[in-house]
Length: 136
Image (cartoon, rainbow, N blue to C red; front, top):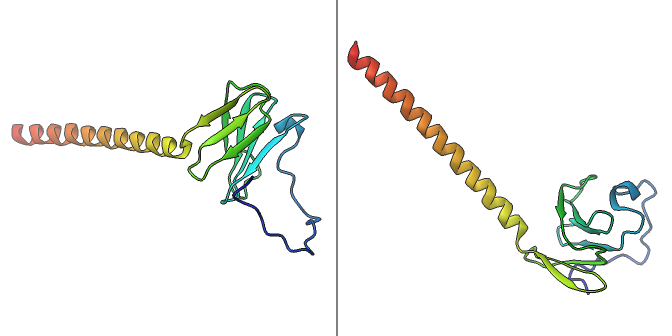
């Protein structure tokens, strides 16, 4: 069951100028699990390398690759909260909980570190110039 069921016109036809964005070199010979969310991001459970490939809307190359320990993934589902669920013949896995939130948190922490280093350098330069001014 999908929460993103497209509503196609009964007279819709395939675009003859469509773009192939994934071939067997990317997804392997027998890809089976694919999911498209409301933002038209494509999630593919790759059996080839035990990975999840994610294409953001309108990208022709995967923008994110998540390596997993699940071998032979056969199905994938992504919740509204970006939780990625996969399954094999033998078990189901809640793979990622809020990956986008985790990436945003990492970027925010990197920004804080960069700002802290910038302030430290500015303080050192200001102190150095203040000491030089006192000596003059």
